[in-house]
Length: 261
Image (cartoon, rainbow, N blue to C red; front, side, top):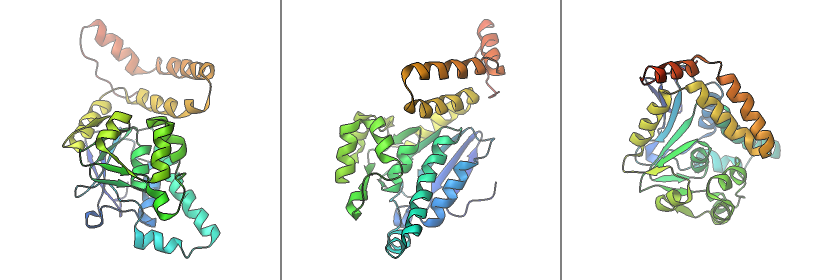
């Protein structure tokens, strides 16, 4: 893949790490970085099995850059505004549809679109300093941005999500952990995230991709249909080599070595 222009990218074994890297402004997004992130998640490198997203300088992401996004939006035509909001939503769609699990490592400010990126990730690890705010209402907009009204209630519950989206207030790290937004809190969330990423990357990654797909698709169906969908998915995975590797390792009293096929 080409070297990204608007974020840092590095690969450590089977784990890729995206770093939002404008620390002097708490890592805000621009039109260009939105588009580049969307395009990246639409076609992530196949050799990478798990993706970690973090921010530089002790903050995750402060949302859309006030000068580079918010100001220009006030001068756009209605078709241009819709093009922008659809583009930002496409970033979330790409994150949810890419086969790799996405893990967010969050410190400090995590606001606006930054909170959405964290929300759209599969797992979230936070520092005690993390303050997550879906603050669209603070700029006169609705909380229904980039899928927040659909996804956030599924993570923390309808009432809690409604409070955050109506008020735009910050959710503390302690609240986020208690409410299920964060999987774990620690002083070094990037270390926690990469440790989990390595664990997942060493596992049956084709199976992880199906788990992610089912977690997303089963939101829209009833239990009976979900059970049928899972039966088809699991039967297909039983034809994979990783399933046989696990059986043979178990029979030999060894730890299985998965290869993702």
